[in-house]
Every structure is written in C-alpha cells, then in structure tokens.
Image (cartoon, rainbow, N blue to C red):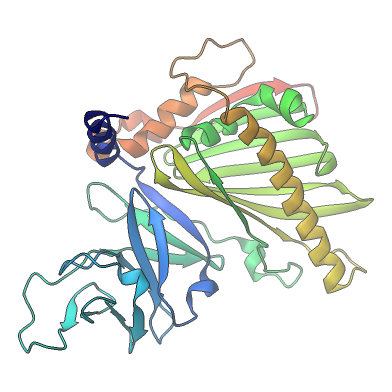
Length: 348
C-alpha cells in the first residue's frame, strides 16, 4: 500500500461514526481487581479501573502530557498513574498530581466516559455528539436477576469478528438464513421496531439448542441483545437468557460477547446446571461461527435484492441508521410501533 493510500485509510477510520448507544464490556466484577484494564473500542483506546467504593470508571487512555498509555500504568488511591511521568488522574479524568511540579496545568485532563452497571454487566455510553442518553434509553433490568430459581452467572465467551457490526445486526430480521446456515428453519418469525428497541420472535427447532425452541429477543440500542429462550435440551426443558453484545473496535471489526444465564432445573445439582449453561454457550458459539464463515467471504451489500419472505431487511437498516444520525435529525416516525410477520406456519 502506498503512503497516500495509507493516509486515505487512516482518514476514513478517523471520520467513521460509531453508533450512539450503550455498549457491553462484559462481567463488571472482572474490573474490580485493583488494576487498569485496556479497552480498544470506538477506534481509540480507553482505560477502565475501579475506585475503592467499587465504581468502575472509564477514561481516554492516552495521557494528554506526552501521550503514554494510562492503561499500562497503575492504580493508587482511586487514581490512575501514568507509566511515563507518573502524572495522576482521578475518576473524572482530572490530573490531580504532577510529582515533580507543584502547579498542575489547567488543561491536564483526559476525557471520562459515562458507564452503568446492570444485570452484573458493565456498559459504556458512546455518543459522537457528547450528550448523555435520553429518558428511557436504558439497559433493562432482567427480572431473572431477582429470582433464586436462576443462576446469576453469564458464562461469557468472546470472539473477535472482522467485519462491520451491521452484518451481525442484520440477523435480527434475516428469517431465511436460519435454515441454510444453522439447520434451524423458522415456523414463526416476526419483528417489532419501536424507538431504540428492535424485537424478534422466533419459533422452530435448533440443531444446537434442541427442539421446540421458543426465543423472544430484543436489541436495546445498536449493540446489546437479550434473548429469553427455552427448548428441549438433552431431554430437559431448559429456560435461559442469552446475552449477545458487541462493541466496535474499528469500522470493520468488533468484539462479540455472548453468554448464557440458566434457570435451575429441578433435581439438578449446581454443577449440572452450570454444565447446561455452558452447553448453551457452546451451542451459540458454534452457531455464530457458522455466520462468521459467511461474513469472512461475503461483500457488503447496501441495497440487497430481496425475495418475498427474506424478512424486513430495509426496515431494520432504517432503524439501525438512527444510531449513526444526530438525535435531532432522527425522524419522529422512528418512535412509532411497526410489526412485521415474515413466517407464520401456525405455531406462534
């Protein structure tokens, strides 16, 4: 690649707009180990660390002094310490100490990012306009988290996917790929779009997750997808909640996190129930790898030629585009409820 071509690629990456919304960073507890954590997301690098009160903070990782990586530093008394010159930054990104100088430069500050914890998961808010989430734009609390009948462990697996996240989000409406790719043809498939939430209702049998599968799911914004699912798995009726989330690294790569939380099977030991959860995670991983094999060898089609029961691909992409648009330019019609039934063989 010529130098000019390299510059053009760099400029394209810098100008890319990452989706507005909450993005999942995995199990919150993993960040409470007293260490800084490196996050390569949204085309940059961030640092995550926990204060002594347990709150997890996220800052831009590059020190405004000389550009060192704060995520390679240390944590001291709720401050992240730069590995280069030991400047210290508080949870809000303000420099609070320059060890060799009494006067702290007024501009010695790095950006802080809005975070939240829900369902034992950590989320970071991204908005290119710099605004906080509007009322109602939240990660929902799952009622299963309050029930002793459920094991509150997500069993999260991760994988790097080298394509644009839209390829993954397209699956919310792509009714006809389940049969050819996953050997799971739908007997009922429908979608509802309303505001920042996109729903999917699926009924069918799964090669990986068992027969009589019922799955009701929703994207809450562009990147966090929860599914309530049940099926006959290994001779037992299993109820689970699946997490399918992603956070973009570059315009054409993202880190996919998927996990499973299961309802205890009466008569099963804790170990047996955890084995069921891991089986569901492995089944989903195998299913995702089938999609990955397709993504690695396909091209992006912005205006696909569709057949009658392919699913509402264009409606999905219109819904998805709102997260890349200034909020005051999002059409008011996006808040209206739109339901599309693609497949219905009488088993909804």
